[in-house]
Image (cartoon, rainbow, N blue to C red; front, top):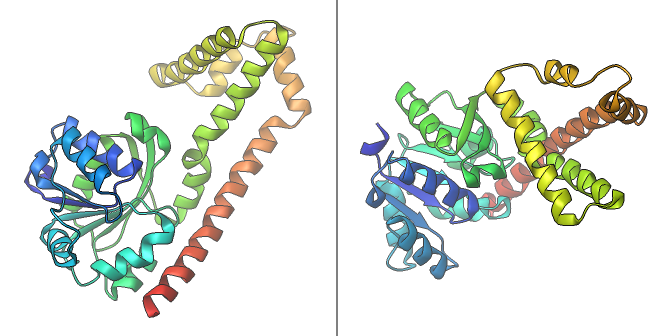
Length: 288
């Protein structure tokens, strides 16, 4: 299905490139059926064209940009939150009611997009994380009621080309932001501490980094390949009164688990706050 579609990316940042690379390298689309638009950085467009064989506008002419969006079957909205209002204002008249609009803009709700358009539209709202840029992303995905079964499958194909995509009710996407959207940073934070501990104990930074990276990589693969619950795997390596037991007991004395759960809750709440701010800002921009 996807191979028969034309796709227009509005925005040429890292998430656009991640999706672009994923669908092109998986041969889900024909390169020349994809166009990327980015008004302010022509060299970036030229780099993407050279790397992936896709199309870019020949000029920054408004009429050409709107034509390319109007002709697309799928439009990927991948601009920064602060630029949503300008992008929707520029392309509002170019969007067709039957087009699939896939948004990777953090905090931008389906309701806000439909209010900007002034109508119902097939809309896919996604919450990817940065690991999508290396094909190992985790993405929550929600659909408006106007999305057809065929469009739903095409959106899932696109997102699964850069990792795992989990369909959810839109009301859970703020939680997804806290769990997996911000999740890589929690793991990096843990790795920082483990490396610091190794260096403080006498390892070189290179030695500590190599050991920690492989440990985290192995643990993630263990959970994925065995299908076992992380708690069960932890129990297998936590002998009573052993070294791992002593370490985990010490972490629990700092309420490590409770702290992390509360941190994810705060990130989720902040995602909701940011969503409200984005809705207020872009709807105000549209009025102006």
